[in-house]
Length: 309
Image 1: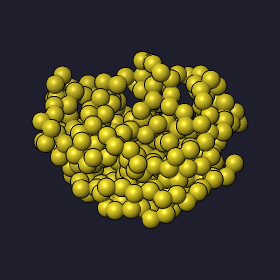
Image 2 (image 1 turned 30 degrees about the vertical axis):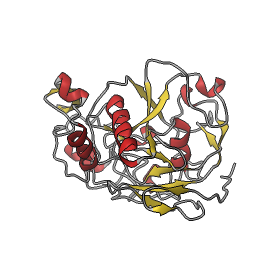
Image 3 (image 1 turned 45 degrees about the vertical axis):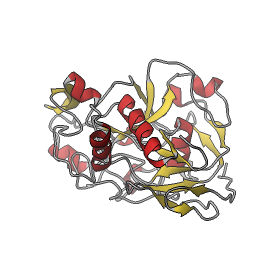
Image 4 (image 1 turned 60 degrees about the vertical axis):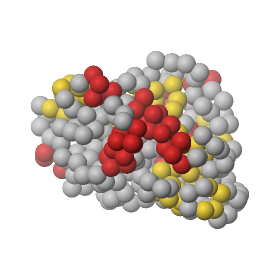
């Protein structure tokens, strides 16, 4: 099913109107965050039974319609942008309050005492994605930014995330179904990670190329998809707004699905710097507790152009 687009007029209170609502049009807010317009349309969500790496909670593959266009962060929220929130709101992250986050050590993700977005266990610059932040921290960032900008900012729904990631493609990845063709598209577990991360098993499904980064990469360093979004595969896993249910694809609504009303886990999408190729597919679903924080977890946000906070 192809993506159905429509030209609609939208205006935002940051950088003026976003033209006639064409896919990929950009707007920048006062924090310097860039957003691209994702038009309404339809797509097939999830995986077919025959898709490589398919898991039960990715089925059944089903048609979904996104009725309203939205502005999605061109990249993941950066460490610098998140720090602006922390300093202005005097916010203490869950990792800082509780004194730990998960990070990579001795071949696996383990509790690192003292780890936080300030020091996730590896070097980062301000243009790297913020990590070691929880779903709760991300929601608070959105609340702060909404108040600051006078526009509604939020985490994307899982359906919006996959729709934005696919950008018209039904392949396993943005580029094709073939992992080996993804060089230049993303920061994932490739030969660089295999050489530099102790403990990665020889049977791990590495991407067969080198992206040049062992841990996080600066956001926007790799190719954008057809909507103009970067790093939808890899770099960091991204929180969505939805609660998780393994049968939601069979029971949920097909127009602007919002996820279950309650749950124990929140959805994460996209894979990360430690993910092999079955773990970075457009349809791959992750879930974890809202308070989880780890050096491979971050977030990107959405702006609703016609809604107030």
